Picture 1 (cartoon, rainbow, N blue to C red):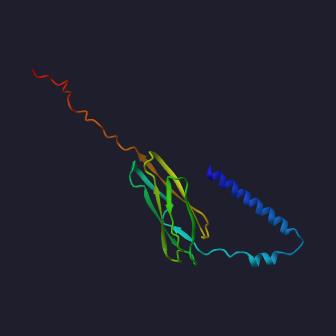
Picture 2: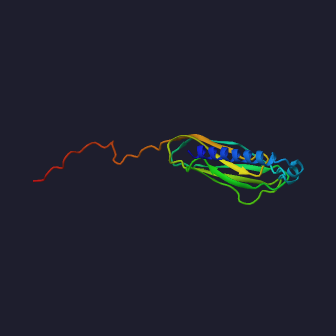
Picture 3: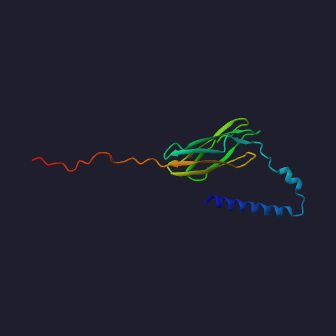
Length: 166
């Protein structure tokens, strides 16, 4: 549902921007030179991840659901990660708050709630000032249910009722 709301909001913003540009461009003035001189420069920061997908494989319910995505700023200016967001509440990413200088590395830690049983297919969106913009990391795997412990032993023979002494 969140993705649908974000998508609709994004489309609405783009529509508003495109209408605003049409109105200012058709006012009879030459805005070509002014638009090129005030345009924001393209970022030269660039993020490169060591992997885009982490596969937990088969793990047991309650096992450690943490993984790390390492990355490097291969660009020419500091990399600033503005947002990291999991696709649901069971996927919680931790991103660096400080800028990553050119040539330096960083990591994004992701914790998945492994108390949920079944297949995993979740994503983490990473927004930054990188040339590539938003990147999507994925986690996948399968969580098997923990074996149920028996409350009472089943292998002991029944002894029946105790005998009364006379």
